[in-house]
Length: 114
Image 1 (cartoon, rainbow, N blue to C red):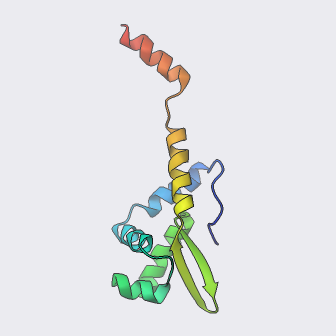
Image 2: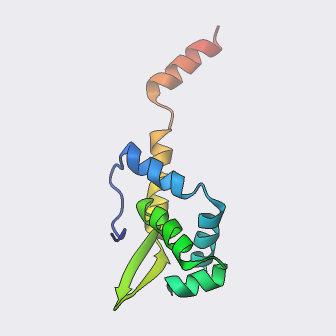
Image 3: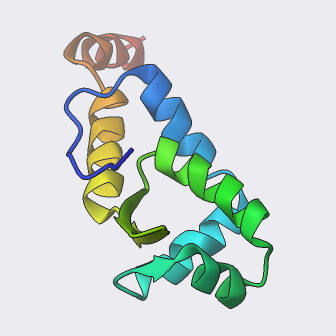
């Protein structure tokens, strides 16, 4: 499940998966590490971060579901990289989702006159 495509109107479930993936210090550490390198294998990443490979694989699965990392298979080895485009697309969509609506602005203006 690669996450190379950009988002077009993500569902609320996709938003939930994305932000749940960010809700772990371990996963944030993984993303921070991936931000500084082009790509890394699971075993190399486990050694670099200092956690077991099975535990890291679980966290990487959450990051894949949240469309925060990309995968590339080389033989039996899976390499991971940060999905910067996906991350930016989610944040743009969130800004759109929570942007004030014209009717809400009109109501706010009416309430401020009271």
